[in-house]
Structure formats: structure tokens, C-alpha cells
Length: 279
Image (tube, rainbow, N blue to C red; front, top):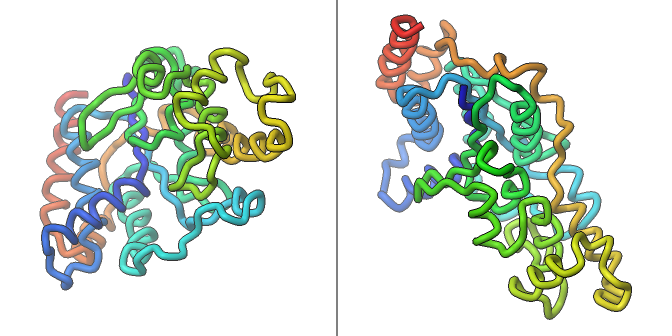
């Protein structure tokens, strides 16, 4: 089987601003939610059987206590924030496993689910559907890969090395050095992507750097690495079969009506009936 793990926060952002650019009607306040559901259904129609979606139930996490500049919900469009909880409710009603994260982030849930799935001998491949560079640290050879839905590019371990200049295991160290503006930490002054890759390929993880390389910035770099390192111990799954999609709950039709998209119900039922035929 192939396990598909979806960054629900990224998908919601993507569809929200996609609708804004298209001039969608303001009478559809949950339009991005419906678009995400259609996206997940497209995957199921294409043969996905084991699917999980992670969301940031709140934007803030434990990392905000470690670094005051870490990303928050400040500046996020209220119309977008208002769609997070309805998305989680709608996905659950559609029968999809959802992880609404509070203390941890959606990325931590994806990393944890990927780690558990990769240990299962019955899993052929784990696909993490997000372009987020943080998740590159989870890539393992061709077994755990990233998929960029927008470009349809698949990033295995070799592709991670080609893009960033370091192996997946060193991505947290790399981000600590170059920074991550999306997450709100600046990296090390004077160290760009090329220099970061050269240092890491020469010395290995930050903890092995000679004292004179980072000097008085060493502790700060280690802190940034802590921010960039995804947790793989989030209690998201007991076994992979929990991700199997078996169809929607009875209340899905009511939620689809609230979303203003009745097509979701018919499409979902056809997908469920298709599973019954093939099983």
C-alpha cells in the first residue's frame, strides 16, 4: 500500500488565495474548505486508500515559547483562519483521518505519521504532500518522499540533496544556518545556502562544528535547529490501517450543504461505491 499524508494547512492556504485570485464570490465563506475536500477526493478517486491530513488547529505551538519571533496567527487573514476548524470537521465527516494540532504543529503530525508508516513492512511508499522544506528532513531514499501538488514533482533523498546540497537528515541543521522566514527565525549572519551546505558536508551536524566556526552564535544556532527539527513522537496513529478510507459518515451530506457544494456528496458516494466494487 501507499500512504498519503497531506498538509491540510498548506492546502487551505493554497486554495484560499487561489480563490481570491480568481475573484470568487464572497458569498462562499467556506469555499477553500470545499476545494480542499475536492482535492482529497481526487486522490481517493485516483486510487489512494490510506490518507491522513494534518492541520494547525491553532497556529501557535510549543516553539513560540522557545523563540519569541516564531510564527503566529498575527497577520493571517481572519477569513482564512475561520476555515480551519470547519475543514477539520468536514474531513472527519468525509471519513478521512485528521490531526488538528495544538501544542505541536501540522508538520510534526506529518513527520510522526510518516515515521510510523515507514516502519510498517506492508507499506510500499509514504508520500508527504507538501512543498514545505521542513518536511524534507523526513525523506528516506525512495520510501518516504515529498510530493509538490502544484508542480507534481516528487522529491526523494537524491532530489533533497540536489536542491539543498545536504542529505535529508541535515535539513534541520541547514535551516538553522540559513534561517526560515516563513517560520520566523533568521539563521546565522553571513551564512547563505552554499556556505551552509559546505560547512555541513565538511563537519556534519552543528554539534560537531569546531568552536571557532560559529563562535558566540553557536547556542543560537542550536536553538534554531531545535525549532527546525520536527517531532516524530506525536500520538497520531497506532497502526497504519487507521488511515484506510471507508467512506463518509451519515452527517457528511449536512456538512456539504453548509459548505454550499452538493457535488461533494455525490462524488464521495461514487468513490465509496468504487471501493466496494474493487475490494
